[in-house]
Every structure is written in C-alpha cells, then in structure tokens.
Length: 172
Image (cartoon, rainbow, N blue to C red; front, top):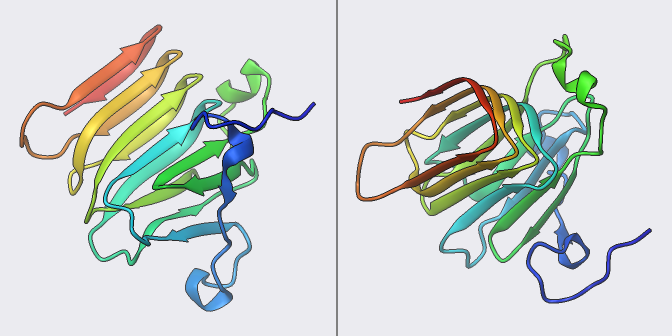
C-alpha cells in the first residue's frame, strides 16, 4: 500500500530521495547518503520508525546538509526543505534487542546551522554527540533504551523530551 501524497511534512510520499554520494566522496562504499546544504538555514533530523544502533555526530566543516552511512539495515532516506527523514523497515521487537555484530549507522549533521532531532517509534543503543550543534530540541517518542546524549553548551532553552519508558538513559 502506498502512502497518499499531500502537504503534510511527515508524509514520506513528498520527500525528495537523498542521493548517494559520488564514489570519491564516500570512500567507495554504496551505503552512504548525503544532501547538499542548498538554501537551508536550519535542519531537522527525523527518524519516523525508530532508531537502533545509531551514532549521531556533528561536523562544522561538512559542506552538505548531512552525511550518513548505514549497515545491514538499509533505511529509506529522504530530504525536503532541510528535513532529513530516515525510515527503517519494520522489524520484530526482538530483533532490536539482538547485539548485532555490525557497526552502528552513523549520521553527521552540518554544525553550521541549528537542528532539531526527533525519533518516533523509540530508540535503542543511540549515541548522540551533539556538542558542536545549535540544538533547538531533542524528542524521543516511543521509549528509550541505552540512550546516551551529549548536549551542546547552554545557549538558551533546549527542549529535551522522552515519551514512553526509559532505561539506561544518560544526558549530559
């Protein structure tokens, strides 16, 4: 079943697919994604179906909006108007509990613009080192297990919200 198209920014049918970087930009592997910064003055990283074994980092020298590398679990990635949407295929909850031998997926955000980070569907084994970022908000909806977040230095009010259960959560 396909999702209807509309003007709702959460509708994945409206997203422009992210491009895979050229081989010289990615080190020769086919599991990398990126998007140009373009005219984006802010960004939003949105996981719509949960996030498992993800490392989120920032890079002040990143020329594009974001850069990402994924392992065996290949998500659908789209970008529209500064919103990077990552949607993993649905998996059984017991699969999220397995300690896969693969390296975690990595997402790097351009630290030259402010960002909001949103995880819907829960987070497991998520490391978010956001020290170099101008962070507007961080929201995890659907619970969190083994979540470690390093926030940037205080420069105002930053909303940090975790909805659902939480286990082994560190925010510093």
